[in-house]
Length: 294
Image 1: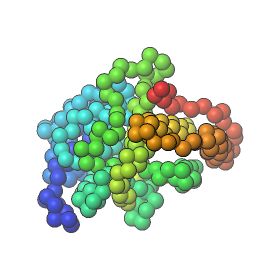
Image 2: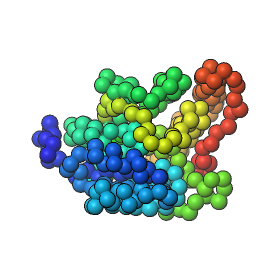
Image 3: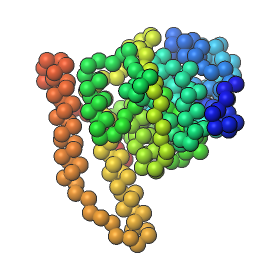
Image 4: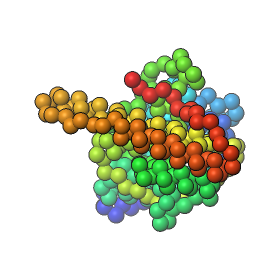
């Protein structure tokens, strides 16, 4: 049993693992889980391999939840809803994040944080799977919002703050994903945590290469997805702020829309240049982000 520096009792930790055809990776991921976690929740995206069977073989007490739509974001939202522990830890199923790091994230919560997020760029963190383009892109996008990838751990009581939808049917348009269903989920969560003024601790974390299979991430398109999420969530926060002011009868300061437009234009150009430098050729600007909420 781990001992917290704050002398508070160690909380019950729910580990949420979104999966889609990760049968070959689960043995490694499960072997790295701390021995005394409260529960492990595998949220499966209708895998066609032996993911569920392997999970149950490795850990008979595993809880298997089928996600309600598609995408990593929807899988995480379903896992958060099912969690019964005091703390929720998000762990990737491909082996890129180390479940063995969970205790130091929980220590950050017991030391006063509401949300602990992993960062590869702090002392003690790092990555063995980051290209020159991804490094430059992450550092430059970090000037707008402090992005992180990998392990995130937070108190379960803050799930309502994230305002994630798991009950609506898939969108009839495009790939059926709703806002927040895709890989934009981590940036969306961070933006909403910041909007609520929660206390956030950054914890050094190391990113490992995927063990088996091929990643679907793309530095250029995912950069645009992150950018769109930043802009949409800023506008969402602004609308909520205006509504609160109107409800209280206070005056609302004007916001210049051109500032957001200038920021969007500058960052799109930055991503385009980075991609051209990395690949030596231009690329058409096309975002693969699902339509934001109205």
